[in-house]
Image (tube, rainbow, N blue to C red; front, side):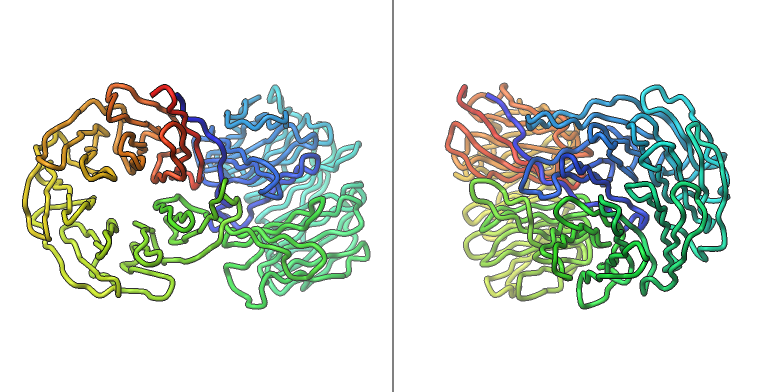
Length: 596
């Protein structure tokens, strides 16, 4: 008897938040790391080749994650200036346990923008925004200072350390300068100004340490000597837009730049462009390239809209992996698994024996997705006050809260109104509610609607009020009617359930009381015996009708809260369900009910 996590499908970097975001690549284990929300995601470069991990021990939104050269550790930073170093050693065992934190330090008073490791995986430089300083050098285990980051007058956007001894370091900043350091201990050597005319976004030593390259918003590439920091060459107008990232080939034969002009360019050691990769023939803001890595098998770039673009030989992407960038707010399982986010995007996941880790972007609202269901085709309602299918978009009379349907009709719930639509999406009827409501459900020809004004459940038969259920102690926030139509599970705003009989409104049990805050979603098994529930307390609880005092639970299933649930399979003894959360992650879970 257990609930066990089986896989997770992570969000993509929230690139809209910061265009100086840097992807990090672990060549030894062929995986990438990046910040997303308050998490750090570590995932296989090819998502079909392994299981992703989510590190959730940052309190504030994360800003950067960098693998150590050994591939065993990640140093991550957040908006508060904290840096945490944690273990990501590959053991061959797939695990959802949180990685072990080796050390953590408060480095700056503002956001960490970039982190670099030395070649021994023992020293770290973290840079960003601050009041008294913009960077700090320290040993990863003890936090002892090993030098000073000086020479800048504004936020430092990137840092890198020469891979070989004698170590050198370089930082670039909003003040248009590159500062070169000798060390360790790292000490100021020289400040190089006048070569960039705008913000400098990225800096990288070549793997052999011979060259150092910086790029910036001025569309300029500047090349320096990797050992001395002396200026070598400048390439102006390298792109038709600002340059946000660069990455070297591992043999130091060339490097790749990523630009806001929707392209990547490969540059040889004569600093001439030899190849251009085009994300899309249509230049758009969402296709701006904000980061790039040269991996073992691919060149991978990150678009501003969160897409990961994989290139091989062709100048167009070999394939593109879309993904959510924001909190997930709606889920539906029909001909596929559909997830909707707070940014209005809807993704479809193919489900066979397992979930395909590469989703398909199928639709977008301009705002928060409130609900998704299937009524002839997939239907979604958003806070842009529209109802959308694959072929049409229908304006609504207000902000929708929820969609439900029966065999013949689609119902849209507003705060104090229900609208009814037929299969042609024509409005056929409506009910004006004399109370405020946030949730409803249907069975047979009846509607059950939450009455938040009187803490009751109101029953409507054929769109006319027919019954009031016994009052709850707190306002009801969720109704889920069992598939056989005999039971209604009602949760109040404190997370406590009352289980009613729909035949007469009598109370079956009030023992389902394990949540500590508001429930956001719940789903019955098809035999009407179990209910899986999740909410703002981040926990998952599986309740039993036959044994109401027994509960299966998994605390902290999603960082910040669970927002949606769906059963994928269930045979009475074992099942698989999926969950979504405010952390932007889709997770699948195995359930063993054999003891029941």
